[in-house]
Image 1 (cartoon, rainbow, N blue to C red):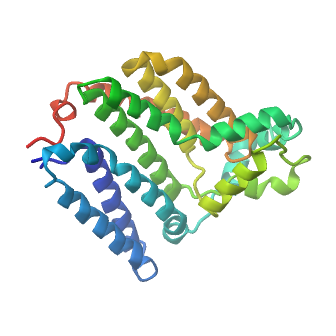
Image 2 (cartoon, rainbow, N blue to C red):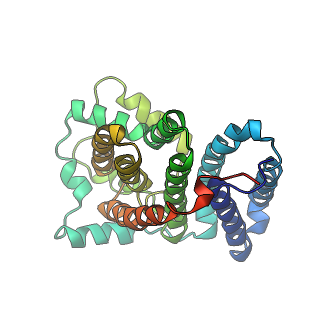
Image 3 (tube, one colour):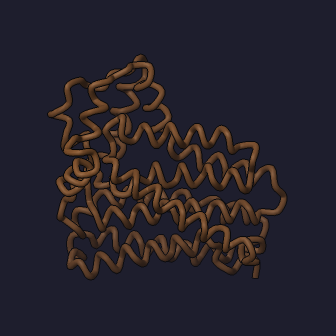
Length: 287
């Protein structure tokens, strides 16, 4: 039987418990009770799935992706409930301080190049596919699942740290706060409008800027690919760098969001290196 929690399950349990603690201590239980009980149900399912037989190990290895998405969409409601103080103005002033009184989003907005906009929007929308592809390659190509669990746990930690940042510094981003000051609208070639509107419809009004999860997870994925699956490194690095550029050029993030995303890559990657000697990652889930 697969009784022990995997590293990914442990990280997710911690995140779910943290969300429920925040709901209670923020005094918002009456408004967010459905999320509170949903999280309890999700926690219970994780416990129940530890009783799956060994032949179902693949389910234990992958189902956490669903949890990641559920928690992300919970943030849309919970962030403004738990911390209603928008930090956009603070981030705008921080960007201006860094760039001598200028807004980088407005500065870049003077140069709207449709082919570049098209490419960057597709790259931005492919955010989840980059880390997912690395994990899938490791899972299929390597018999020993140690590297898969190391990378999956590291990436998951990156996601959850960015989520925690949303509660500490709720911000909507330049596409909401500075769009009325832009000289030119963003224009692509073929799919830009459809992709951008689809993302806006899926996310709604999210306080998910600080730190930039796109930056954190994408750069982290490139570093992990360099160490654990070198054939994917060049592609992932180019993909990640384009992702970083897209965050500001497409007006989703402030520069400080990106800086904090880069800063968080370092400790998460360092922690992954320390995890390498831990037998939990090579024998995860076995009783």
